[in-house]
Length: 412
Length: 64
Image: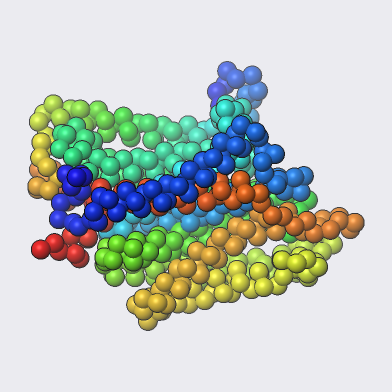
């Protein structure tokens, strides 16, 4: 029934199956929308946020999707600025994943601010001394860039492309895409960094506070670095999941291996920088404020030494070593293990920098403050996942996302 | 955001922050305006009248 909209030369599942798939994921989406509407109508009392936790599960989800969506800016940077031409075969998907991640981040912020009708205040009455203002500016502008990168894909739909104006617009946008990609890389560098900077400048929170250069704490650079390293890993992971679900090879191995290799080296250098940062913080910065490293990892039921080792070694060094070796990249299982670990690692890092920061006692009479989110927070955090799955499903079905699909899966 | 808003001050923070924002917005705005105007001109000149599955006269490699 919808075959006129499906790209020529590719095979898709029957429409009935696709609608059933959308209905199942759509039910989860509606659950999230219900929780979101509750938060907007009844207010932030629907959450378990309190005086300890002004940042809740949402902000972790926000920072995590922004880091995981970093594949879009870094792959765009490699493709358009550095000139890695092979990546043209995965850039569309990286853009789609980035678009989903960033639109989700903005949606989460719209729920989190409690009064979305006043969302424009951050632009109109900007506090120019706030890292979060920079984040809001760059996030909004970069989302506009991602939308501009996604529009040509929509216009390349079989029916839309028949309209000469749409075809010409799509062509012209591709012609100057390098300008948009460069702008996106510039914006991403600053907002990824500023998200790290938010924790790094909290001098009242010794667990998060870091020294740095000029106004930028080291966490500024580490956040950008980790997003550039782990974002492409998430792009590879979602590509592999899509291939498993559709039972088709969608991107050639040499493209995946190139992206994996670059990510591996980025991750290894990030691991070295993060280790130095952690050592300096543990031995100089924190003691200067009256804390020992053990104060941050003992005396509570959740945040033990395991979290530090898991984040830096298991989800940092291990995937880096797998991805920089040819054997590791070429082996399908080890490649998937590496990109899963890297994606978990960057999400765990954001968890630590958002939620563990809040949990650690600061005053001598203080206790660890543990936190469990309300169901509304959980539902609104799952909402972007359902939205992402639906958008990927629709885009894969109707848009030419994977340029190599026809060649890899010839239709008889 | 604008100098006519009451809390605006002509200091380095406002110039750097707002300069960066307007710089990015201008690139995005000018870039999109160029694309749209050129697409209108190209359409009036009769370009782009083919299906995506056919070869594109602009030699754009199926826009990838």
